Length: 237
Image (cartoon, rainbow, N blue to C red; front, side, top):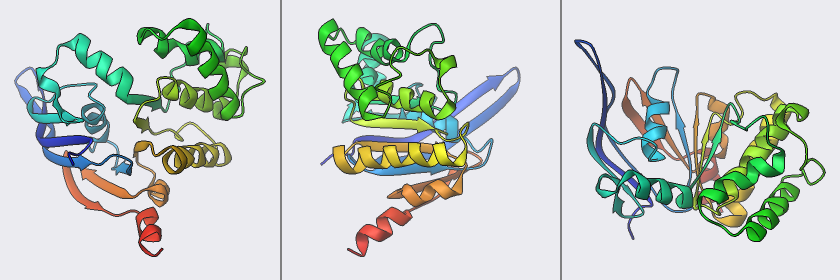
């Protein structure tokens, strides 16, 4: 069986005048369907750039990326956007909610670009907001919600197209410890109950507790790939 995501000798280089900056240097990674993966590294390690590659938000300077067996370099940008929209749901540290839209409208938005019928997308958005505990906050705008509530809206939005992969970039970074734990428990439940592939990018070593595979990156190079504590628990069963 082919990996869900595979990076082969991926480099990302930026040219700043006469300076050449190699942010990623020969990355080789495979992510299997249904894994909970944590990509961890300090600030400036290249983990956000790696996230953009794993989430096919950007193409490599050199190397190859496969998403579900498809070489993304062979796709037009419109095809890539459609594939990304169907396969991957994104959760960001800054929530990235549109302030003029309600929680319901924010959740619905990605499904519009996938041409989902209106009745179906509204019903699914309402169901997801209820599932994340915001059934009574659907008509509230982001400024009327707490940070934890905004992140739960963002998770519901990430799920609207029923993607195989949830890619979360520092999802607890702007939350207090209680709200952060609730968000992580929600992601863990999606992994366990719905078999979603979770890819989490963070500098917080505590979040390794949730992982099955931990990818340590520093200075644009993968230092190690190890089983997380969740994998150790599973192995003892």
